[in-house]
Image 1 (spheres, helix red, strand yellow):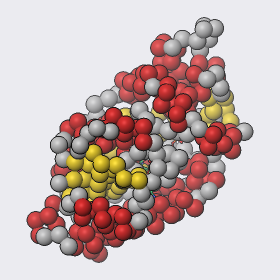
Image 2: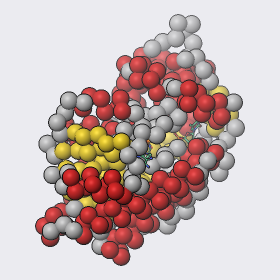
Image 3: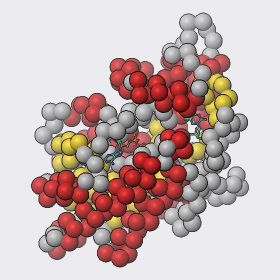
Image 4: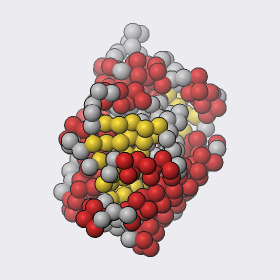
Length: 352
Ligand code: NAD
Ligand code: DAU
């Protein structure tokens, strides 16, 4: 049997598929619309792998999804497909509503129709695993405990509101139709193949190109940073042993301000790729206008996942960030490929 992975050419999706195929002989169908954030190069090492099938398409295309579910006898859907960048959602929320809410609804309906037609054993084994974000819990005060699965939703950006809406739909499809769903709310991921619009890859790219490293506002916004392969491992565990209808939070127990993240990154670059003038990359740090409605703090309580499923982090922030920086240094061709005219337009719009 096969799993269907949506958004598989994006950052977390591609890491998940690459990791999955090193661990399992179960086939993967990767479905991705290849928006600006999707990149087939992320999956190019699988070009000759007979266990991997790539299909370009929209999660909202019910005919296509239904056909794929039947053709490959899919036993689980892992839904990564989304518009994922908060700053883009502030400039133009429309695509976030269309993919993250309407697309998720259509995917749920395709899954429900397919699942209803399965025989009892296959029906029991089927899973719809939805990937969501810690941003749905909203901004925490500095003294608040990290967000757990029972906390109320208080999304503040168009992006997080659209993810919250999709989580509610997923929950409703379980409560109303008993579709066997699982929801995963994760903290900020970092690692290989992340598009350079997000803080860490953007700063690696700008540092190497001698450009400013833009820090929004005072740089004291806290995020909980999780190495992407620790997230992949959590998803595999949740798919295997997670309890149907449940939500699992995945985090790195690793709260850092944006400024701390960029300073650590600069220190690693200073060591691995010293500048010819002997100066530090940290000299390129520049404070810029803040993000509207910028959430001050996210933090995830991952103890349910640890307690119930035995998941443990494999990377510390220092080891994960070092691996990430090394990956970008060794993959300049990948970076040059994704930095298109369209990307330059975005940088101009956001930072000029
Ligand atoms: P990404 O932007 O790198 O990738 C998203 C992928 O989805 C792209 O390949 C894109 O082409 C594809 N896509 C977009 N719309 C589609 C559609 N309608 N149909 C099919 N494919 C479509 O995002 P990411 O960082 O890999 O995030 C993946 C998922 O994880 C998202 O749901 C995001 O909300 C969630 N998430 C991300 C983080 C993070 O730190 N990056 C943290 C928590 C949760
Ligand atoms: O928390 C999980 C979320 O993490 C995911 O759901 C989102 O898909 C993902 O994009 C990410 O959202 P953030 O907004 O936290 O990530 P980003 O990398 O855009 O920003 C991280 C922090 O760094 C945030 O406080 C804003 C700040 N920042 C970001 C950029 C792009 C800057 O200071 N300068 C920048 O140029």
